[in-house]
Amino acid sequence: MAAMLKVNDIHVYYGKIHAVKGVSFEVNEGEIVSLIGANGAGKSTILKTVSGLMHPKSGTIEFMGKDIAHMEPNKIVTKGLVHVPEGRRVFAHMSVMENIEMGAYILGKAPEEAVEDVFTRFPRLKERRKQEAGTLSGGEQQMLAMARALMSKPKLIMMDEPSMGLSPILVEQIFSIIYELRESGVTILLVEQNANKALKITDRAYVLETGKITLSGTGRELLEKEEVKKAYLGG
Image 1 (tube, rainbow, N blue to C red):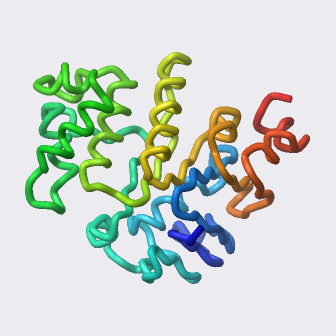
Image 2: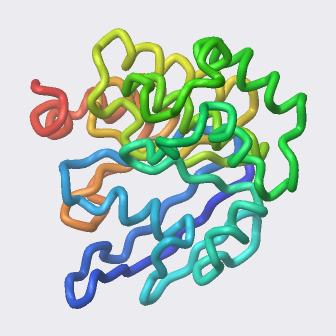
């Protein structure tokens, strides 16, 4: 399998705060790779840095063999890398359909085939396509954020805490959708506090503590590690 994303020895700062300290990892084509860790471990900062919202002070980021470490976010999207941010960030006063169409802005116009594809995947959004996005439930807003990301036909989707604040039934649905996306050929980099759920569907995972990777392995290997059980699985 070819490495689609290569992050090598990145250091990221918020002012004087050293938030990410020499992190290196890879995401291979067709994988689900998870970053797990406590709040403040640096997971979201890594996603923001890969997507161009922040820039590393040092280190390299390559996507599909191209250096993207200091590229603008809109250019990164055109390369096929999309970020679904924490907290969904839907356009609350726009309709569901308008939100979905915004996901295709790099294409100029939303292709009908892409719209049909997301409505097949998220039938609830089709039912609510004329509704204001801000009136949707948390789970529906998460589905909308994912649908919007899929409109640009990405090669790799980064998802930041997609299950946060959702009921157990909706958490199951969201993880089922993530797994189906991988099965349909989309590569996924997942940040999740629900380590148990993430590790069960992930191919490989990295554990972050205070800006450093402290453990890595397959999802199954990490589920069995005592230190992971104690820290993240309530074992």
